[in-house]
Image (cartoon, rainbow over all chains, first blue to last red; front, side, top):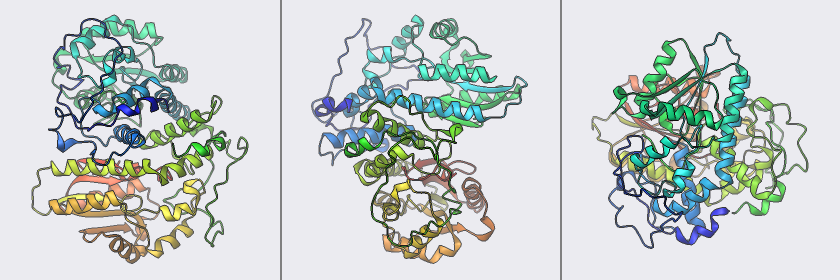
Length: 286
Length: 286
């Protein structure tokens, strides 16, 4: 395991810390305007600051006996997230900070991305398309087509409270690389004749940088790029995306597949024929 | 990793083998009437017999370079299943046989079960109950409340084609142990005043052995135990369980939580306020 060298650092209590939700981009700016070094700060004892969120606690720590157990507990936490079992969370559990960094920067995340792209591709190949230009596939953007790992590398891979202002500055650079397995899937879907609809929680104000970034990353063609308008402010991700998918269906599209790294991309209304959950251990959008 | 010693055996192509679905209990009896020794048969080369299921293939093998990669690929396969990303599958991929055995018999499965039970319990504690006797929680039975691991230990932990006749004989013994974290959750829900509804794909003919088994394992009280009647034969698990949940809601129950080890327990209609996916790497019920 790539994470083994980090394990001595992981034996710490876990509960949630209070912070603004990622999607809402309401987090206070924490003043880190300069590039930050890749230092992950490991708490050295049980966290007193995060002990008031017992209701939604992902797991209890009393029986964490050794490093192997810590790694497995973090594994359980991550997998529970992928299975949509977790209550909303604001930051990666502190004792899983090193685990999540190792996961997101190692082969496991890469393989997980490949697996879901391959499953989606195999499914798409097996669909009988109507061929009337209304066979559609919906993609989320962040952590689905574009990777914000360079940003999160400077922000402790989700262990730091999300800061919408800083993230906006990253978005405006338009430098997020493609998630390669998603790019391959994307091109395969275009090849099959599917129409691509991009549905993102990014703001309409970021349309042009998003277009720039997508094109620079290799995404060359889509039917629609839907972003949050001023009128969509305050809507939950589930509500906003359900409404937009409803409009897509209302225009006659058949949503045959839907890919996203958040369950809020995939549940709600007009969810389409099949959903594909891309891995993401860094943040949760309700 | 507990699976490390098995890794030299895992570098083999994976595709699906053709077999009857678990839930349909249509598999041919393979004649293993006697207890089988705990031998896992590892194919020694790329499997020719399973190469005709490319459409639904979970992953490709061309780039599997070492043992660590094999384990990570099996991890990706398992997590993809927990996230409902996989096409229906009939047996565990051959090169993940050792991985799945190690997972199901080791601490990882145990911790995953604890994690989902704790999340469910924390959620339940936070619900405001109406207290009118209609606040309900739906549980699946097999691999949710009762563990069939002793059976699957004799049947290669899902690497052997499912045999409904043999499984029925195991069910009739009524000796499946409780999944302990689920039993704790179960009792906590009763304590909170929730009504328990058991909804299983087991046949009505197995009602009395199921009641015996549940009571022997420590499950002492429930409002309803719903099993597949003759009229439910041929229905998919999703269809059957959706219909039954619809009837439950029609009787005035509010399904506040729904626990199952299969996505077919959790999707469809009348799915309730929240779902909890218990881990299961051994079989898939469509």
